[in-house]
Length: 130
Image (cartoon, rainbow, N blue to C red; front, side):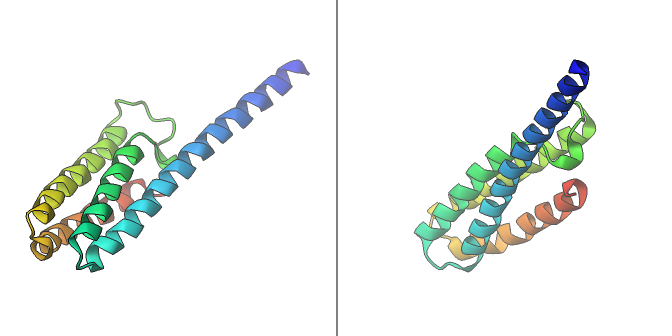
């Protein structure tokens, strides 16, 4: 009987840990989406920089989480490596975009970044979303 309770406790703990990872990842995705909308529509350079910086922080944080679809995969699996690479690509694009906005080229930054970010989003949601 004690063994059954131990197993149930362990299963509950695993579920709680997985849920907390998913919630954190979900929050990061919401931050990315909300700030991406701001970046797409603002004409204010400071708002754009704030939105892009928030996106960059959320992307870096999300990279530390694992989507439910990949739970149980070893850290060195091709799927996990692809997941990390997706956030590296997004981070790189955000760095370039921030630099461009800082030099006063908000419209040009949007024209270059939006198609790239949209493609990163589309490709990786197809791969990693449940």
